[in-house]
Image 1 (cartoon, rainbow, N blue to C red):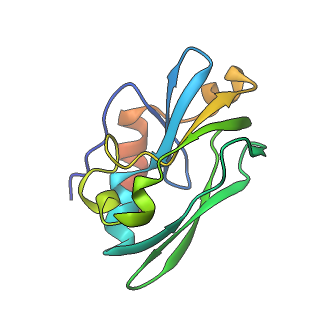
Image 2 (image 1 turned 45 degrees about the vertical axis):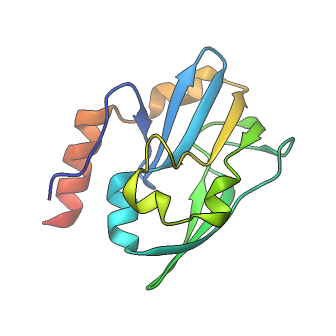
Length: 131
């Protein structure tokens, strides 16, 4: 299945994406992740001001078939939370990249993002798990 995987973002092996804008970045889960989870019914997000290290669990997503932890792709401090997701978690299924970002963070170490996958590498990674 061809999952939407926009360029201009970096991707993790645990199916999160991060889009950098200077030292600030938006973070969410990928189209592949929401497809695997199926119908998302609940999301638990952190609070603005919380700080996390790279790979720390910062959010939880629950669907009709599973719950999944969401890991932060780079160390940082949460500067904004997409609180609309708590009222409309199904947005994650329909718009995982634009409308359903989880948090905006102030990235502590930009070099941590260099280790992540670009869109084409991530697509290959997803295909390798689905076959």
